[in-house]
Image (cartoon, rainbow, N blue to C red; front, side, top):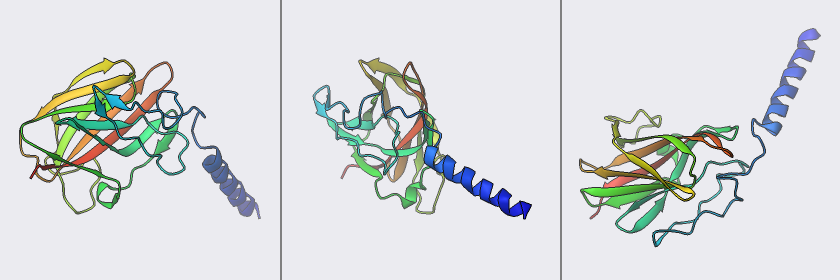
Length: 193
C-alpha cells in the first residue's frame, strides 16, 4: 500500500513540474513582448519570428543576412530564462530555414539581444539520417567577429569552402541584466543556382 502512495506522490510531483516548469515567468527575448523584434537591420527587412508552440519563454530570434536578404533561423534547443526545451532532430524539422548562398559568402548573423557573451558558429555536412545537432559529419568551427549594435548582437564571418548541402549551427550564451541562458539556431545552406 505504501508503494501506491509513493507512485501517487511521484505522479503529482511530475504534474506540478510540468505545470510550473522551470521558468521565471519573464517574457521572451530581451524582456520585450513577443512580436517586437526589430523590423529592419541597416535597411534589410527582418522576418517576424514565430512562437515555438505554446512555450511561454523563448530565446531571442536570430537571422542570417547575406546579399541583402535576411532569413529567420530555426530555433534549436535552449535553456533560457529558466525554461529548457530540447530540439527535435534537424532532419525531422519542418521549419528548418534553407538559404542559397554565392561563394565566397560574407555572412552576418543578427541575434535580437545585446547580452550574447559567448558564441560559436559551426558548419557540417547535411545528412538525411537522424543526427544530433552537433554530430553532423565534418563539423568544424568558423572564426567569427562578435559586436553589438544597439539592442542586437552581430556575428560576422566568411564562408569560403564548400557549402553544398551543409548545416550552419550558431550556439550562444546569454548573460545580462534581464536575461541568461543558452540557445542554438540553425539553417541549411546550399549554393545559389
